[in-house]
Amino acid sequence: MSAPAQAPVIRSLLDTDLYKFTMWQALLHRHPQTQAEYRFVCRNTPAYPLSTLKAEVERELDALCALSLTDEELAYLRGLRFIKSDFIDFLRLFRFQRAFIEVSTEGDTLHIVARGPQVHVMGFEIPVLAIVNELYFRRLDTPAVRAEGQRRLDAKIATLQAFAQEAGRHRHPFELFDFGLRRRFSGDWQREVVRQLRDALPQHFKGSSNVKLARELGLVPIGTMAHEYLQTFQALGTVRLRDHQKAALEDWVQEYRGDLGIALTDVVGMDAFLADFDLYFAKLFDGLRHDSGDPVAWGEKALAHYAALRIDAHTKRLVFSDGLSVDKAIALYRHFADRVQLGFGIGTHLSNDLGLTPLNIVMKLTHANGQPVAKLSDSPGKTLCDDETFLAYLRQVFGVRAA
Image 1 (cartoon, one colour):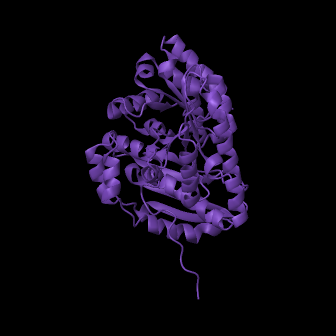
Image 2 (spheres, rainbow, N blue to C red):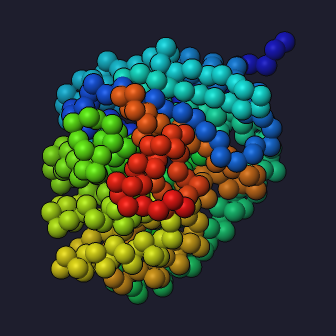
Image 3 (spheres, rainbow, N blue to C red):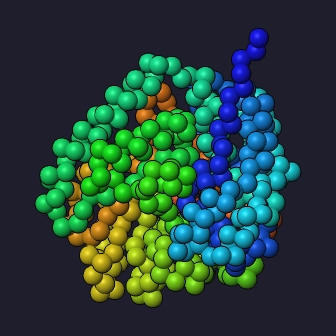
């Protein structure tokens, strides 16, 4: 007798990051005609070839494309004040289209490409990453691995509980968020981690980027924008490349009218971002998110920028989200906590710290409207673009040196 089939990895379209919905709504309203291509990449060497997962990934994508949002899930999204009624109408009809995503292999390498109208393919990113991760780690999952994960989680909770008294002496509170969906060990493990953090650290743990978990566990869903949103504006044709950041920020302001006010800074590097982040935007946005480069240097640049614009930094927030651990978050908090509001989005270190080496996987926007797009990251290894001519042009336009 064959073993019973396991339930699909993704069983709800809410099992994704909030910023997929927020970017989706903005692009649907303002640039619905955009065509896009997203590519899956593994940046490190896995314990066994990802190509061996191809058949399972295909089955998971078939299951994903059969899902739609339930009335209860739509009602939850409708209750978020920044989600518009016509977007809910769109989501009521939405299903992922299997024809827009392809899986192939080349030797040991697994290739996944989503290509089509951006408002129909952009949502594939997070489910694909969660699917590959969970399938990969199923073959490595043992009771001993789970026990080690629990031991490490217990140690993190103990560290944060011991830190609570010190945090109370600083001007601004220590606030922690779960950003771990895309590289989680499994869906059930992420849920268990978030539940334990919620119960053990109510004074510190403030939410999750995972909309499904936020709904189920009574947490605040957290997220604004990712790189793909700003990168899309590099290829719209109606905006000069030099002006794409300002155009993206302006569209965001018009879409959300004061909600979701944390801007991402590292699509062309912090210096080039701050050159565009003038008094108008600095007053309108609540703060900034760090996702590459030295976090202390980045934070100091942000504070100096606010000071130069004569903006009280105590009214703004810096959110750190680049490869954070609990210890790194605490160190950054100690450095900045008396000068600015803070937030810490911790991902893999919470959702996939069980003694096994996590996969460093991404699924990034590579083309829009047939043109390459790119991120000139402050961490060179995060740059993802195979068109060296476009990268050179982008660097020239923004005065960024090649790393």
